[in-house]
Length: 294
Picture 1 (spheres, one colour):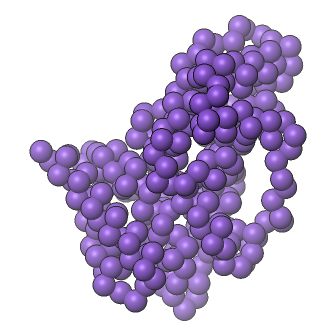
Picture 2 (spheres, rainbow, N blue to C red):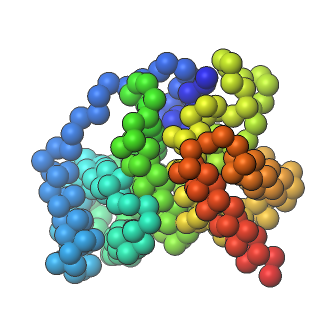
């Protein structure tokens, strides 16, 4: 069975080629002390309300703002967004309040004033592109792209229950970020749904299973893919409508085929959790379609 290729999409900054079957990464290092402190602050803001939005943003953004004028802000931004995304993995996908607080925090970071001009800021923007540190959430997309290499089983074997759960939580968060208009990760939703529900092109097929990229690992990858219609269904359906029936990525044809495939999964020999997830996705897609055509 081929390794799901949304680990590294061809043409992205992370790699020019997708991972091949059997490719793995070394064990993931733990959070460093700086990232651990950032997680502690985010957790306090998200779970206990012991910190205000303003105080949290000040704590998280100040090292970046200082580095923009006196040093290199890239490591500070990388630590901030890595910690945020690693923490999002631990937030249950259906904890709407906690995910909402995380999205609110990202919105607040995006809305704050730009740091004053300085050599660090200039180098950052010339290296990564864009005209702003905060309004464009510089490096957030790049850090998220690296986080997407941490799908279940990326470090060898099949995904553990913890990996599957964390992958679903992370996709739920990023889908909510997309739905809120904070940052557009809709292509990640396309990758997840395509790799889980779309038939392979015969030229791409590898191994004994040639139906989808995830093959017989549906129980590992469907829960995360389902988060996209559940948390950002209207956005994805809107992309399908814009593309029409023959779009290269999103399209009404794909939307319909994914819906049909989910119905097949419900009636197939899959685990109860996977069947429940498929039913959840069907309901969300029905709601998004109804809202988009009303």
